[in-house]
Length: 263
Image (cartoon, rainbow, N blue to C red; front, side, top):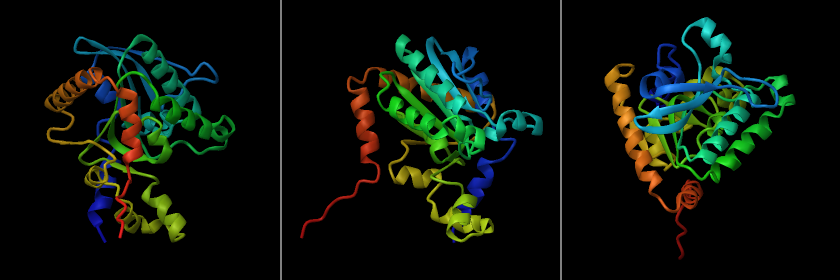
C-alpha cells in the first residue's frame, strides 16, 4: 500500500495551507470582487472578480476554504453550492465578452451535497460549467492548490492548462467516499488513496495536468512571485494560440486514450 498518497491528502487539507484568497491577494493587483449568480444569491465558497496580472486585466475565480473555524464555516468548508458555480460561470462569460483571460484556483473536497443544493440544481450547474468552459473563447488556466475532488473541482478546471501544487490532490472522489463505497468502511481511506492515483505525479503521468508547481517557500512572497511569473508567461503564449478552443477540446479528448495494437 502506498501510504505516501494519503500523506499528500493530509497536506492538501492542512488548515494553514494558503487558500484561494491568499493567492488572489498576493499574486494580483486591484482585485474587485463581484458577487451573486443573478438567480438565487451569493456563495462565499467561490470568490471571483476582476484583477490585474501585471499590466493585464484578468478574471480570477477561487474556491475558498478559509483558515479559522469561523472562516471555514462561513465558506462551507470549500464545498460550493450551485449558486457558486453559476456565479463563476457568469464571471467567465463576462470575461469572454471583454476578452479577459480566466485564472481559477481550485481547492475543494467536492460540491456541497445538501438537500438545498440538490433542489437548486447542483448537477445542472456543474454540467453547465463543463459545457461552457469547453468552448470559452479566452485562455483559461486552472491551478489545484489543495484538494481537487470530483465534479466540484472539475467545474472550474476545464482549462487550456491545468497545474497542480506539489502536495495537492486530484481525484474523482475523496478517499473516505471511495472507501465507504468499495468497503463500506471510511476507515479504509488510506487504502483507497493509494488506489485512486490522486497525487500530482500520478496526474502528470496520466496527462491530466501539464505542470507540477514546487511548494518551496510556500506562503512567502517568493512563492507567489514565482507563480505570478509562470501565469503571465503561460497566458502570453495562450493568447497567441490561433486554435485555442480546438486545442482545449483535443486536450480533454486525449486523456485516457490508449493505443490499439493490431495483430
